Length: 150
Image (cartoon, rainbow, N blue to C red):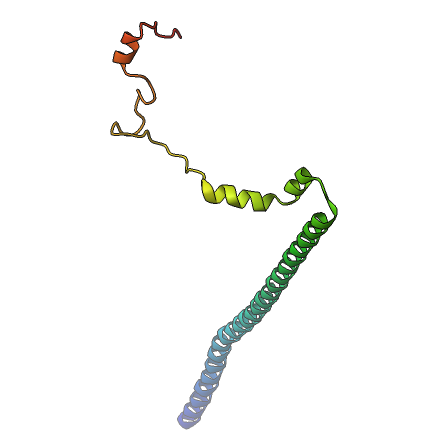
Protein backbone atom coordinates (compact mmCIF):
# COMPACT_ATOMS: atom_id res chain seq x y z
CA UNK A 1 0.00 0.00 0.00
CA UNK A 2 0.88 3.46 -0.47
CA UNK A 3 2.15 5.67 2.36
CA UNK A 4 -0.42 8.31 1.70
CA UNK A 5 -3.21 5.72 2.05
CA UNK A 6 -1.83 4.65 5.42
CA UNK A 7 -1.83 8.26 6.61
CA UNK A 8 -5.45 8.61 5.58
CA UNK A 9 -6.43 5.32 7.22
CA UNK A 10 -4.55 6.28 10.39
CA UNK A 11 -6.26 9.71 10.43
CA UNK A 12 -9.70 8.13 9.95
CA UNK A 13 -9.00 5.54 12.71
CA UNK A 14 -7.86 8.28 15.12
CA UNK A 15 -10.93 10.33 14.23
CA UNK A 16 -13.24 7.35 14.92
CA UNK A 17 -11.38 6.57 18.18
CA UNK A 18 -11.75 10.21 19.22
CA UNK A 19 -15.47 10.10 18.47
CA UNK A 20 -15.78 6.89 20.53
CA UNK A 21 -13.83 8.30 23.47
CA UNK A 22 -15.83 11.54 23.29
CA UNK A 23 -19.13 9.65 23.25
CA UNK A 24 -18.01 7.53 26.22
CA UNK A 25 -16.93 10.62 28.19
CA UNK A 26 -20.19 12.41 27.36
CA UNK A 27 -22.16 9.37 28.53
CA UNK A 28 -20.23 9.12 31.80
CA UNK A 29 -20.50 12.84 32.54
CA UNK A 30 -24.18 13.02 31.68
CA UNK A 31 -24.95 10.02 33.88
CA UNK A 32 -23.84 12.03 36.91
CA UNK A 33 -25.80 15.05 35.72
CA UNK A 34 -28.91 12.90 35.27
CA UNK A 35 -28.48 11.43 38.76
CA UNK A 36 -27.99 14.90 40.22
CA UNK A 37 -31.09 16.13 38.43
CA UNK A 38 -33.13 13.20 39.80
CA UNK A 39 -31.84 13.89 43.31
CA UNK A 40 -32.70 17.58 42.96
CA UNK A 41 -36.18 16.69 41.77
CA UNK A 42 -36.72 14.32 44.72
CA UNK A 43 -35.42 17.00 47.08
CA UNK A 44 -37.82 19.57 45.63
CA UNK A 45 -40.71 17.10 46.01
CA UNK A 46 -39.72 16.36 49.61
CA UNK A 47 -39.51 20.09 50.42
CA UNK A 48 -42.92 20.66 48.85
CA UNK A 49 -44.40 17.79 50.87
CA UNK A 50 -42.77 19.12 54.05
CA UNK A 51 -44.19 22.60 53.48
CA UNK A 52 -47.64 21.09 52.89
CA UNK A 53 -47.37 19.09 56.12
CA UNK A 54 -46.29 22.23 58.01
CA UNK A 55 -49.20 24.19 56.60
CA UNK A 56 -51.69 21.47 57.50
CA UNK A 57 -50.17 21.21 60.99
CA UNK A 58 -50.48 24.97 61.48
CA UNK A 59 -54.10 24.81 60.32
CA UNK A 60 -54.75 21.90 62.68
CA UNK A 61 -53.34 23.74 65.71
CA UNK A 62 -55.18 26.93 64.82
CA UNK A 63 -58.46 25.03 64.60
CA UNK A 64 -57.71 23.16 67.84
CA UNK A 65 -56.99 26.48 69.56
CA UNK A 66 -60.27 27.92 68.31
CA UNK A 67 -62.16 24.85 69.56
CA UNK A 68 -60.49 25.04 72.98
CA UNK A 69 -61.38 28.74 73.25
CA UNK A 70 -64.94 27.93 72.25
CA UNK A 71 -65.15 25.18 74.88
CA UNK A 72 -63.76 27.52 77.54
CA UNK A 73 -66.22 30.24 76.59
CA UNK A 74 -69.15 27.82 76.64
CA UNK A 75 -67.99 26.40 79.99
CA UNK A 76 -67.81 29.90 81.44
CA UNK A 77 -71.28 30.72 80.09
CA UNK A 78 -72.65 27.47 81.55
CA UNK A 79 -71.07 28.23 84.93
CA UNK A 80 -72.57 31.73 84.93
CA UNK A 81 -75.98 30.38 83.98
CA UNK A 82 -75.84 27.77 86.76
CA UNK A 83 -74.75 30.31 89.36
CA UNK A 84 -77.48 32.75 88.32
CA UNK A 85 -80.07 29.98 88.45
CA UNK A 86 -78.80 28.87 91.85
CA UNK A 87 -78.95 32.44 93.16
CA UNK A 88 -82.56 32.75 92.06
CA UNK A 89 -83.82 29.30 93.01
CA UNK A 90 -81.76 28.02 95.97
CA UNK A 91 -82.49 29.14 99.53
CA UNK A 92 -79.90 26.94 101.28
CA UNK A 93 -76.82 29.02 102.23
CA UNK A 94 -74.45 26.02 102.38
CA UNK A 95 -75.43 24.94 98.88
CA UNK A 96 -74.82 28.47 97.60
CA UNK A 97 -71.36 28.44 99.17
CA UNK A 98 -70.58 25.20 97.37
CA UNK A 99 -71.81 26.64 94.09
CA UNK A 100 -69.71 29.81 94.51
CA UNK A 101 -66.33 28.55 95.78
CA UNK A 102 -64.33 31.19 93.91
CA UNK A 103 -65.91 34.15 95.66
CA UNK A 104 -64.92 32.90 99.10
CA UNK A 105 -61.55 31.58 97.96
CA UNK A 106 -60.55 34.90 96.47
CA UNK A 107 -61.07 36.76 99.74
CA UNK A 108 -59.10 34.16 101.72
CA UNK A 109 -56.25 34.11 99.22
CA UNK A 110 -56.02 37.89 99.18
CA UNK A 111 -55.90 38.07 102.98
CA UNK A 112 -53.23 35.37 103.57
CA UNK A 113 -51.36 34.09 100.53
CA UNK A 114 -49.76 30.66 101.02
CA UNK A 115 -46.08 30.62 101.92
CA UNK A 116 -43.55 29.03 99.62
CA UNK A 117 -41.95 25.90 101.14
CA UNK A 118 -38.36 26.47 102.20
CA UNK A 119 -35.43 24.11 102.48
CA UNK A 120 -33.61 26.10 105.13
CA UNK A 121 -34.05 26.93 108.79
CA UNK A 122 -34.88 30.43 109.95
CA UNK A 123 -32.31 32.38 111.88
CA UNK A 124 -28.57 32.89 111.72
CA UNK A 125 -27.64 29.22 112.08
CA UNK A 126 -27.84 28.52 108.38
CA UNK A 127 -29.32 25.73 106.35
CA UNK A 128 -30.12 22.29 107.71
CA UNK A 129 -29.32 23.16 111.30
CA UNK A 130 -29.38 20.15 113.64
CA UNK A 131 -30.87 22.00 116.58
CA UNK A 132 -33.55 23.92 114.67
CA UNK A 133 -36.81 23.90 116.56
CA UNK A 134 -35.36 22.42 119.78
CA UNK A 135 -35.42 24.18 123.12
CA UNK A 136 -32.15 25.52 124.49
CA UNK A 137 -30.55 23.36 127.22
CA UNK A 138 -30.81 26.09 129.87
CA UNK A 139 -34.59 26.15 129.72
CA UNK A 140 -34.82 22.37 129.90
CA UNK A 141 -32.59 22.20 132.98
CA UNK A 142 -34.56 24.84 134.83
CA UNK A 143 -37.86 23.12 134.17
CA UNK A 144 -36.56 19.89 135.81
CA UNK A 145 -37.88 17.76 133.02
CA UNK A 146 -36.31 14.59 131.93
CA UNK A 147 -35.36 14.53 128.27
CA UNK A 148 -37.52 12.31 126.09
CA UNK A 149 -36.30 8.79 125.45
CA UNK A 150 -36.06 7.51 121.94
